[in-house]
Length: 212
Image 1 (cartoon, rainbow, N blue to C red):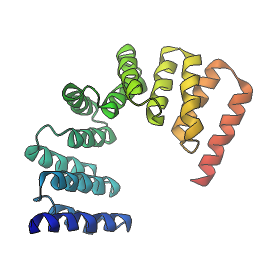
Image 2 (image 1 turned 180 degrees about the horizontal axis):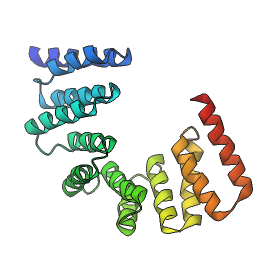
Image 3 (image 1 turned 45 degrees about the horizontal axis):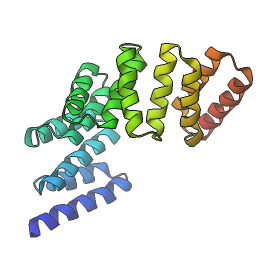
């Protein structure tokens, strides 16, 4: 249909504007695509929410996703995006509710499993449940570095330092530019007391900070 082609063109134009960091104009394009076919409309809402995130307007991003979920009730992509927006606002109970809704609908949604498990590990709560969720995510995506990092961090919280080191060394081997993952590994190495490795990872963190 002609209308569908127009919506798709608006999406493409919006993405180009996003790459040019012209986020306000991109939002206009995305809003014009939200009346297209379901697949395009969902993308348009997701892209608009992302533009609000980049403009540091998380409340507007959440409002956009609330509007989208009013049309596409229970859509997991929209729920996950809103959960991450809630996290950025420290609205953790709302984040947990959305992530749990996703997992209830799709027990193999590894991003939601990982995000919920990591959130608990980060706050040092529900650690056994967190480990269970992250292990399920790891079984589904064994080479995903974010999940490897979560595996390491939850084992650290549980006091399983050698297991934590195993997973975090895997995560940072493929992702040496991620400061948070390196800091997780450093915390584990300090708990173990491996001075040589502590020095090496401390130097990597310093190098990352200097390139930021």
